[in-house]
Amino acid sequence: MIKILVVDDHVVVRSGLKTLLNGKNQMEVIGEASEGDEAIKKALELHPDVVLMDLSMPHGKNGLTATEELKKLLPETAILILTMHDDEEYLFRAIHVGASGYILKSAPHEELLSAIISVSTGNAYLNPTATKKLMSEYMDKLKNGGESSSFESLSDREKQVLELVAKGFSNKEIAESLVISVKTVESHKSNLMEKLGLKTRPELVRYALKKGLLNFD
Figure 1 (cartoon, rainbow, N blue to C red):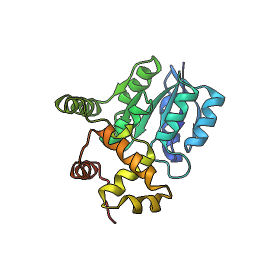
Figure 2: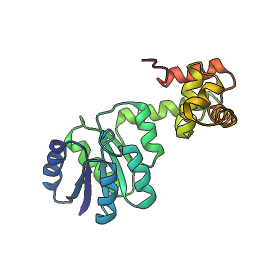
Figure 3: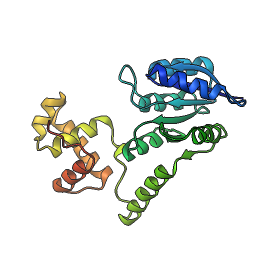
Figure 4: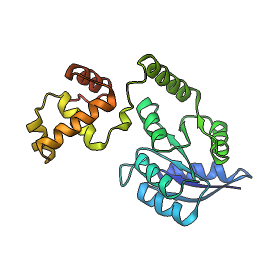
C-alpha cells in the first residue's frame, strides 16, 4: 500500500485526488494539507511514502520551500510535484530542491497513477515535456562548456542583488534598498557573477532579461 499525503490549497482538488487515489487498491490518501507548513507537520506525523505537492499556495509556505525542508527532515519520502505550471524555471527549481518528479494537473489520471508508483519505488518521474526541457538545458550547458551555473545555485540575497544590478542600481542604492553594507553588496555581486559564469554588466543584464527579472511595473 502506497501511503500518500495530498498538499493543495484548493479543497476541491484535494477531494478529487482523494476520490481518485483511494479507489485504487495499492494506494491510500492518509492525510491532506493546504499549505507548506501544514504539509511538513502532517508528514512528520504520518510518514507518507509519497507527498503530492502543489507549488502555488498563497496562504503559508509554498511548495518549493516545503519540498526542500521536507527532504531534509524525511529524505526517504518521495515528493511528486503536481502543478498547473508548465514552466521550465519551476521544473528546474523543483528538481534542485529534491523533488522526485514533476507532473502537470492537466495530465491524464493514468499518468498520475504511474508517476506515484514510480516515485514510491525510488525512481524519478518526469513527463515527456519536462524531460525534453531538462535535456535542452543539459545540451545548452555542454555548448557553453559547462560554465553557466544554474540560476538556482544563487542564494535569495544574490538573486535580489542580480535583479537590482540589472535594473541599473548602484552598489550604494542596492545597499540602502536591502539594508546591507556596500561591501556586502560587492561580495554578493562578485559571487553571483562567478556562479553564473558572467564577466560584464551587459551579460548580466541579458541573463536577467532571459530569466524575466526586468519587470519594472
